[in-house]
Image 1 (tube, helix red, strand yellow):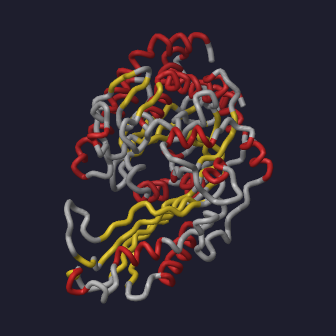
Image 2 (tube, rainbow, N blue to C red):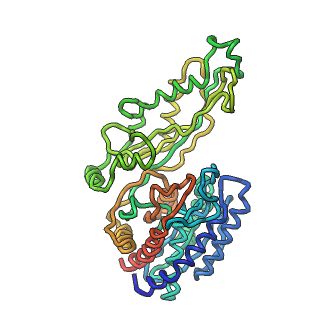
Image 3 (cartoon, rainbow, N blue to C red):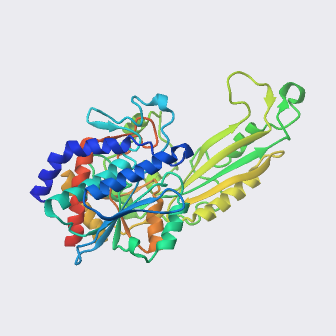
Length: 460
């Protein structure tokens, strides 16, 4: 990075943190209708900020839901165009009582900025904007042309985004050579890198009913089936407790094996099972037999019960035999699994194994997104690795991630646009949980990384 840009960022660091705190104060919770005005306020804040740092054609793009904040700078005629993606909506903050400081009153403690959205994704998209600001302020231009898309429903669903991309594929607002996805992370503060694969996701909620209504446990006990017990029996059929293997017939049919080269590379990464268990507060790690922890998290599919309930859940005793029980099941998918097919084989298994006397119905299904693998030798990823090494001052690596970022697959399938996943969120920063935070020193390195990446893309 040029010295003048680095100097500018150093002098602007405190102001950037203050501006990020302004953005974090807005409770832009997309899943809660009562925050509709806050979503609009957040979009307007970003519009004003894009104009303030020198971007052009700044406006809102309607989606049928929360709008997309758009801006561009398109004067680097001989260089590629980079579409920078992020999102301004955040997860709900509940349970608020578990936060050490109010979730929408950003607070700095020990070099960390605590607030909902600090790392997912306001901190990271703001870092990209800070890099653009510095380049424009120092050079009066950008090394490559840039479009900005900041959406407001990443934490809600991809329906409106999918419709927007479909309607606008081939139009000017999506015209780019590659997408820079800020909604991503690194392994550790000492291990910067670029994500080259993401797992997909599919989910289902279902109900078991064993009677027309709850029944008196004294009058009918011993004579009728119990819905929560039936649910427990059904859920127990999903996995082999000895091996951790998923027992749904056909579930593994399309799973692409992890290449040996990647398995060897992952084995060389800094990782300790005991440290991870202690960090997470679990007595031991678990998973599919025959695979390391990193292989389970990055390269193997999962099936998890994310919720199960039925009967009386309030305080005290209610002597009933519950008539209904419910569960949600979520799967993380790997190449070449198809989300819709996985849901089909899962439903078939659940129907076939529902205990006698328990009627099975599906409440809803969500084929959330498909897994994707990016080419590690792509010039754009090489540019990102070089930028991460420059920004963090350490060698950078490629790695897979266990989470899902639907926009990557949508950009590829609908728009034909390849992506680079370059972010700096860390696994322990409590995204989606109380006390979410971002490390301010990592934030500063992230800003420098984004500035270096744009220069690298132009040079390569």
